Length: 456
Ligand code: PLP
Figure 1 (cartoon, rainbow, N blue to C red):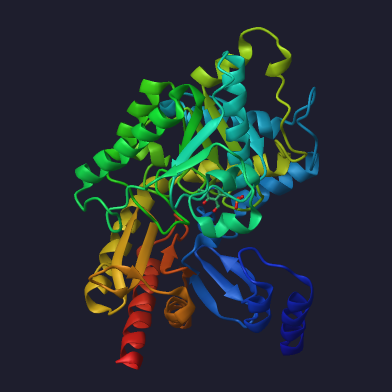
Figure 2 (cartoon, protein in one colour):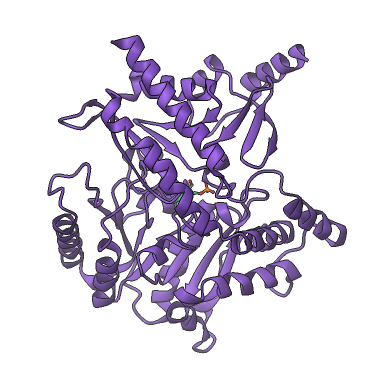
């Protein structure tokens, strides 16, 4: 068995490129190969069973290895595993799922859904349909996008162009012209104010200036995550999204909520924007929609946007966009089973409750651990921000390996947590219970205490 484990690890080094990783690093630090799972736990090839503090990659919301989801996929495979949604054909699960998403998004007045295979596809679809919308309603000059610094919108060229972290973008430039990022309303790190209301004012003013400078009539949409995930779990002040909606309305700009992480319960409400009391025009969904069992993305349109396609037939109205996997029946069947669990087990409610417990257990680390500057989050999206100086809040240099080291100690104590730059990110399955939450708290508390003891 040991030989097979080493063989797999060697083969991986020889043949596979991994996302967001330098191939030389993958070669030096051979990956932990995950082979088994049950509920909130995963087991690696060496037999270590750990609480999955990442929920896969923010996505395994209903937990691993759920019989209902597997059964739904197999049942669909017994009928037909694939057929296209391109002109003239469809499969039953994609139709049922589009109706289900509209029903679950009734508060947001979701009217139409277009499927794809990933979050990046959902964003690309949103950006393209937003531009097409403006062509259809007779304002073809509206082509630009505004977004937030620290925002993450996937890896396609459109998503990269609205991405707010240069690190992801620079090496793939040139990107789309006409994309602008304004400051993110981040209370812990900003040049304006720690007061949430003042901070919102400052960022909204910046937005208004950008709109004025560029010309409202040239801007297609504003895109943002209701809570920034990959950027370091950044929760905006509660009045930011309502103010953002108001500014978009004032200038006719479409509001796109990238709900790839926050969709279907992770932040404690069914959608992140619902948690802020805001109805976006377009939502990007993926991850939680199938809990990662099969890849699926979805882009929703409200009536205002969708109706532009029904104002008579024009060549510009043809949707020249879509993927071979658009409406994939296995993915849609998986999603229908997942969404039954999300609603039936009130996962948004559990995310809110368990998120409070996780936050309460981890908050003390900002006082007790020499390198934890802040613990923040909403629902089951939580970040520990590591700093080299608590006064200046200077992020710890990822090159020091400190964040990786503490994450490694936590792993030894039975919890997988995600070191991402100077932040440790937590996004466990939404079905998590108190016992597993406490494993994560204990593991990180141990990791931080051990680091402090070793470096004192
Ligand atoms: N948008 C957001 C907010 C994300 O967090 C992600 C992925 O983490 C994406 C888009 C891209 O999704 P995918 O990796 O499925 O393409």
